[in-house]
Amino acid sequence: MAAQFGRRLRTGAATTAVAAVAVAALSASQAPGVNDHGRQTAADATPSPEVSASHGSATGNSPYYTDLPPLKSPNPSPTTGPGPSGTGATEAGIPATVLDAYKKAEASLRESKPGCNLPWQLLAAIGRVESGQARGGRVDAAGTTIGKILGPQLDGNGFALIKDTDDGAYDGNSSYDQAVGPMQFIPSTWAWAGRDGNADGKKDPNNIYDAALAAGHYLCRNNWDLSQQGDLDRAILSYNNSRDYLNLVMRWLEYYRKGTHEVPDGTGTLPDNRSDGGAGASPTPTTPGVTTPGATSPGGSKPKPPVSGPGRPEKPGGGGPTTPKPPTTPPADTPSSPPATSPTPTDTVDHLEDAGTGKLAAMAGDTFDRRISTRAETEAGKAVAKVRVRFTVVGDTDTTFTGGESVATVATNSSGVAVAPALVAGEKTGAVTVRATVVGRTVPGLDYKATVSERAADALVRTGDAALTCAPGGEFANRVEVKATYKGAVADGVAATATLIKSADDPAVADKGPYFKDADGKTVRTLTGLKTDAEGLLKLPELYADDTTGTFLLRITTAGGATLTVELTVAAAETASPSPSASPSA
Figure: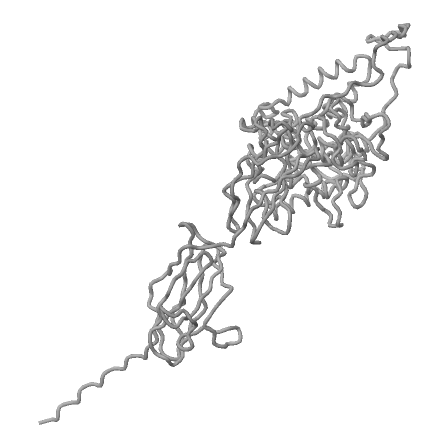
């Protein structure tokens, strides 16, 4: 209904003014806190006050479609047939391949990042706002869009200024970046956020499977839990930093949560209105002399010719033509080319400096207690704010930032400092390098060295106090179990060794006494490759005794230096004393 309503309003002489009033009225009717049942929904919740503005976003804050969801139920009407730009059932429907991509992305994130609680309806809401569900589902069988979907070039002319970061590889523009594909990623974000969602070996922003999975990972970074309104607000604002955008996406999210269905590819509705004031059918703005073959705007149509011909402007009241005024001759000193733009903050960055990061060290599986801080400076050493700094974990390591990502982009604050998310050490030990670079500016990167050490324990204790005894040639009734801790906390996944030693003064491996058995049943007195479980517990295999009696020692050691010595006793069973002989009878 919203799409049809918008099209009707643009017909006629007073289109612009009437449309503005009508859309404002329609928006007011769906304003936060108001709905047809008089109750507040998740879409109506006031964004969390702690949500902060970010100077970076997935889309570079490109324009988006502002059409509101229909007021009617999202359930399809059996009497309404689909159409490539129609209303009715198709307004609630999502093209089959596009819907499949959203649901597959949700399933993937449910497995890889279960704490994120990403609903596929959020991807659908963003996909609707960004590209009208890939221009109504104009995709091929593999999910790749038929023709590129490009946002306007981000040249600072009414939009953000983001100079080319990909040499035109994704957007075909070697001067400025443009948002690309059905989820509208800018090239610099796709470079690290891109995913292969259809397992074809490529990460293509024009493929709905790849783009939907990338959007899911982008929304799930920073350990966000999207079932919490505050984190959901932050995630959506990080995609496009606009409160209007946040509210609109929440409207569509709530709409799709009420129900939807699939429609054939290519039959979805096309949005009409864009946040930059343009219509959905308007072409992608380009710089003279710069063209992008095969590219279309999110609306996907060619521009319509003006209603009135040159020299015959139509009056607002719809009257007849008027005589055009002769063109005014420009002054002689009018420049023939546009003035040079002022340098952006990024243009002024000369180098990066460490901002007091300190030593970076952590045990495997732990979060580093220090975070990387980088300061962007001019040649004169002056701080530069509002510059995007990209932090990348490089090399063969499984250490990542919080949320499981190996790349994070952070804007510098008023002091010129960008603080990376916390690093989480993986299981691979050794040196790790994190490289800081300036997005959109070629200056030397700054490398930070971090060290991941193996998991360790500083204390070991037995979990029971039962005596460990056995008869010669028998089996110990109780197994040895210990608990490892590090600074009082559970030490899980810590490597341990258990050895039967000769004596307290001689740690050499004993050649007699108690023993373990290997997989083949052979005698072994040293066990390696042991690890504590998630609770820090380690339960050793059964112990056996040979024919040697006496007291023996079992020593358990762990990475980190924790040691525990356990005493084992092998003794023959006590025999009962013979009963006294009966006295002879008198």
